[in-house]
Length: 509
Image (cartoon, rainbow, N blue to C red; front, top):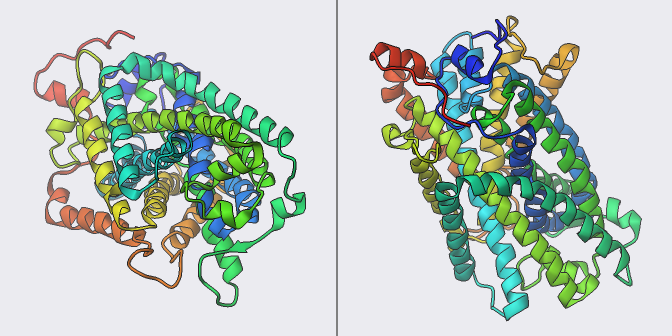
């Protein structure tokens, strides 16, 4: 599974890795970047999770925390991108783990794949639930609708079902909207920043924008303020998720060995810069910290917009965020379904035969789309009775995804005969990789800790339970059964040859 000899086409490289081209290769380098940038979505994650950092940490966690986490995430993205260039497949993370492991290849692929699947489903759930929170706030402002947990959940259902339908029937539209989404985010951020800089009569002192600490977690022990700031980093860390999408759609991207790694890194770097400007502008515009943190709208940035620039203009700014979040959820369902398709192609999900089917008309894995929609909905169900359900979903997404992100990076560091692809880090590979690994270990500990006190059933952080359930189930299944039949990625060219099936030419682009 080396990167040599150098192939002349994407299809040849995929064939070297053992796969016949089945998905339609329609995405440009910009489209590949746009998918990841849309899922990171600074107008989604940073807006919907802004209240987390307002409660835990305050402005310092929101602004300087965003910069710090963004730099650390860039190390992770760089390390992932190097591996992606060598192995541009839809399976991505778990496939890389199997390719790089010296021993127990199947076990590495199995557990990395399950962490990736958990993270993908959780991030889809968190994105669309966040979009529902924003939509509920928008409807409250425009139609005076009372925001309730039940109504927010119903809005979530409408959004995620719409995303499932769009990915099922509007494949060409999804591709076009992903490109539109990237520009919507960039122009939208510019509009919000300019309005918040020019219109408000009063702004928060710049020193407070960067250095004020707030601790509204309920914890009052010595050092509780510092603890709150660390917990508040979840806002930034959660927003910087989903950029593995560039790898998952590699089999649909032209010049994938270069375009997919570029998509991974650029989506993080552009988000870091644009997100910092956005968050400084929003925090600078805070008029009444506590009233906006506890607003009945359920979304602090919405109240900040209204208080800073007035009802109508504030509602317009919220509309920009709402549309961006809709784009974000759409792209997340796309990436999620591709991961489920690839994992099922290798027989790792229950009912894999069903989930690995590709619709011959659209060239997309229709069944896996609806599998992901269903499981994401189940993850959001606790929101009907648990006030920290959204926070837990974000934590689950962060932990699941980042363990999957860094597993192959660790194996790459332990694999001296790794053959880099055309996009690589050269002499910087080792320091970048080890920094990425250490950072992921830190956040996996940090985001299972209690987030509110005193701890009760309604504010309990059930992240650890969700992660342990999935890890426990995957472990039991592995030792009871899967280790006897799961051999890692199944190369469909080899499979077809073994069954005497013809290998067809690549689908039309």
